[in-house]
Length: 110
Image (cartoon, rainbow, N blue to C red):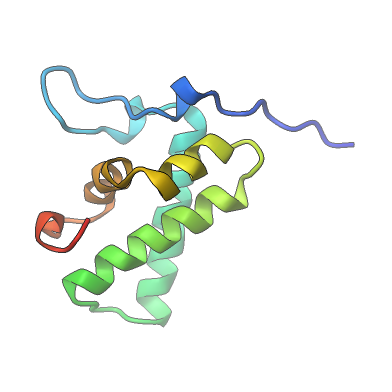
């Protein structure tokens, strides 16, 4: 039996902000959250190469949201708290989207 990494606690699922700002840095996040976001980068690159290389902004934001959920689900049960945050907390997902997108997500229902 392959040992599983420990489950992410509620505290580890929280986003770590740069001091005195609302900005996020990927390398400041907890390990499993970084893993979910790095998977997002990899899947998004493939999606952009083979599905739609030039999505409009709303579609690009939707790509990122869908891939985040998929990535978190791929690593359950360890990332169950992250997955729950992504499903239930719109602010949580809106803070992650700018890490992978230069799009102005405020205008596109993030």
